Amino acid sequence: MTYNPTYLSDFPIKTLRETPSYADTPGYQYLIRAGFVRPASAGIFTLLPFGMKVISKIETIVREEIEAIGGVEVLFPALLPKEPFETTGRWEEFGESMFKLRDRKLSDYLLAPTHEEMFTLLGQEMFHSYQDFPAILYQIQTKYRDELRPRAGLIRGREFIMKDSYSFDLDANGLDVSYQKHRQAYQKIFNRLGFDYVIVSAQSGAMGGSKSEEFFTVSPIGEDTFISTPSGFASNVEAFETYDGRPAIDPKTGELLIKDGDLAKNGEPITLHRGIELAHIFQLGQKYARAYNWTVQNQNSERITPTMGSYGIGISRILATFAELFHDEKGLIWSTALSPYDFQIIQAISNDKVKETSFEIVKQLAKRGYSFLIDDRAISAGVKFKDAELIGVPQTIVLGNLIKEHKIELKHRATGSIETLTLDQLYSKFLLAGS
Picture 1 (tube, rainbow, N blue to C red):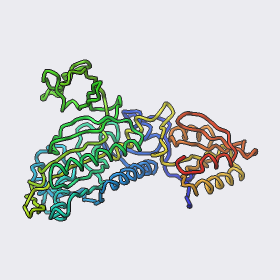
Picture 2 (picture 1 turned 60 degrees about the horizontal axis):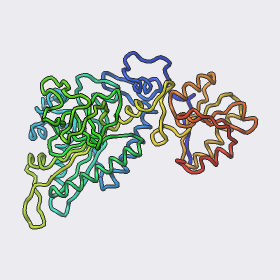
Picture 3 (picture 1 turned 180 degrees about the vertical axis):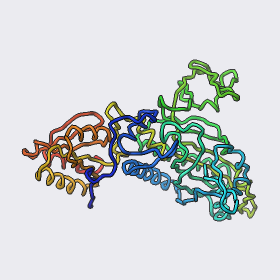
Picture 4 (picture 1 turned 135 degrees about the vertical axis):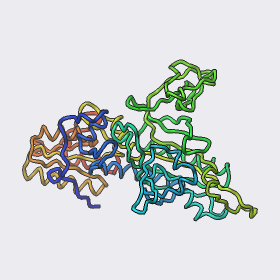
């Protein structure tokens, strides 16, 4: 395997020493300072090369797990006509959160906040009899919502990347199976991504349908509240009722009406948590199929209405959430699974031996699947070390005066520990990719 490392001397993106005044959360601040994203406008962002690499890794994990349960990838346009959303009533139901526009012929369009209508119409075109079921289609696509108050960078934006998949089944029993497949796939995804998460009962809202659950991770910067009980029951506040039947929030003002220690319906005391929603899964049922009068032939040659599920994950939100959860006072701390590079090499001194050793390390370890960011800039070693901590690559190889003894330093970002190794010891330590 050959791999071309990234040299910071050739890199167009610069790190920032000062924290931008508009960045309102720590992870967002570090993503900007370390050169992962730049804001284009409120809630709208440019992904820079580091950010693109992380997004690519997230997408790869998501694709692998969704395709493992039979998902087939498609890609719908983000610019959609008005008519499909009129049919389902959501042209008006979405209200001011939907971006609407007209073309030069004065035809109405929207920037898609979601794609249930389009998936349903494609299913109607593709699936005609029981022999076509069950099926799962998915996409990774940009979505648009006119958020009133964008905040926390990519956590709550007006343009964001999302994976949405849809299951198609003949009946409710089939939908239950597809729903559980997705639920388990999402658990595998978040385990691979390295998130602690809670699955909570939820309401379907504008998506419609019956059963609905959200995947949350606890975070002080989260704008959503959910509750848990000692036995493991969890719910978001919109779907929660107290022991005596009181709602959790005021339907008019949105004010929270519950507190820690109040009783759930099962009689247990509740604990309130702030969290970030990472994913939402729905049993849509027949809402969308009925809207388009979609029927298929079953095994008895009868016409029946198929049933659907919808399953979304916020791809760009995962990037932002990881930054919020995994950082310290020096910068970001990426996991092996999501880091833009496996190693950063710092050339702490500049001479031919250091350059030759850098090349040799890349040559040897790239064969084993590793990627490299090399800091070869003509600046002080101190600045290089600070940038390495800011960017947060898991391992940093330091080539300095020890190179005279054929040794390097290996710094571990998460723990701060440092090992002094010979090159052979370095190669043995990382004999297998991912070790």
